[in-house]
Length: 174
Image (cartoon, rainbow, N blue to C red):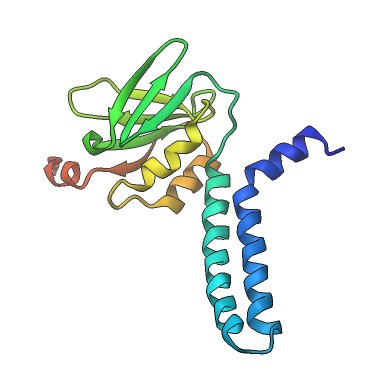
């Protein structure tokens, strides 16, 4: 009954839509129940709904599909990519640079760790949406800047995050 494209788009924004429903329920309880305890619970539920909506919106913007090459798994801070031509693993704690190569087709996340080859993960690989939560644990990452870079595309590699330790030890040229 629903076109497959519309169904896929609704599934992508599922978390945001659930958050919006929780927000509406909270606002209903807060403003239309006539006071009392449910009135105050409504405010709390509305705040929770707003947070869920915002988080769901960010996750939906991060997701690029699941039809790309390879499979991504994130287990206890270790990102593993199993690809048809390459693969590897990277520990979140060992990363010193995260970049996005939008010129690759599809775009690739580039995970850099000292003494290891760069791990390139297609943004459309199965399970790549789990990288959003993994990347959010990097200290000082700017999530909104990451999402804008992902949406913008381009032909130049974009540095998304650099380790605070790497920033201090990078020598200056002038």
